[in-house]
Image (tube, rainbow, N blue to C red; front, side):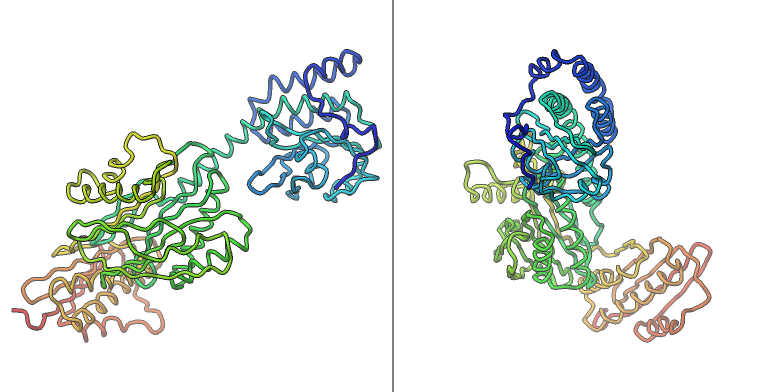
Length: 556
């Protein structure tokens, strides 16, 4: 920590940054008056019309000229992390290029911000934490706080390459320039943060919900505020490598860019861990350890559920989040009973447990964040009761979709005190005939096999028949992905039909099959012919279709 220069050091004086003081100082000096007028005219007329970067650069250039100094810099406060970040500099650009960060109450700038007053130092007799200051040959420095309505948002400092006794006039002018600039800087920074937060929010929430046979999705997301008040609530839906579907809902503590960025990190890491095949409990533990190691100092609650549509079962794990609401096929609502676990990102070594719940056709599931049900001064149990009533009514008399109906019943027209994220999942019977369109990617085959097995079970196929037809269809689909498109993005269709004792499954693509087979390839057709009664292949200019036919035992 740098020490004040001497008994006459301005760091020991009361903060002097009033316009009256500037007027008194300027009155005694024509030079002071000229440079004050030059500096303040710029601050008044130009700051509001520039981007933040241009404004800071131009302002610092004017300050160097008006105060006849070699360096000028601005550091802005990141309150969430308690550090000052070098944002702009003239003559000291290396601070910005190296991303200098100064903790509050440490170093020269850290003291200025923590004590909210001007400080002058002589670097020959001061201990500094930023080596760049000495490397640049700076001898004397003056720093003043940037404040908005008494709240420190950063620090502005100047320096010289020769020893200089900064006087009261220098302090007053720099502080007044900082005061005039602080509001414009704060407005520009808020605008910048608002834009960043809005972009993050749009890109990190799913643009569309997936189209999965036998499922219907609906969702709502509403922020309690706008701009940087947007928080860290999110939901997600995606397929796992084993064909199950993952549903996620979570809430990062706090609002603003940091909350949104932590949400982004959690969402990305969670997807990666789940698609790598880790167990749900392992995923949450790994996520907790990751956040602790990154030092984000932000807790988050979340629930992860994996749905096996074929087994009609949910596996769930929760880290401090509110319990999902399950509506059974008869329309009865109830909270999923599970061990809540501790939120992630707060304490290392947390342990988590999974629970399993039946999820037969006709069931509905609601995942949500606390803004949907919590009310100030009200028991959380009252919120759960209100949610159950709204969900039961929405299930019995749907008006639009489940998420919209529940939201309207609980919050329509109300002023939101907290962000709201709501994801609704409904299971539906599979139709006969059934036709689905899928992206031509290998990672969808597991989900396709599960969907086909569910449909075959529904139309009366036994386990052996389900295996034979599903494997044959998977081979035909894999051929379409590999041979018809060769890695190009496209789709293929799977059409299933049952008539009496006969099942037909037709896989169609719109590509042109390549004649050269990869090493080890070519066994798919043999497998199909061994497992089903008939394989019919039709190739044409519009693509290829593979029709599989098998008769069911015990069906007339």
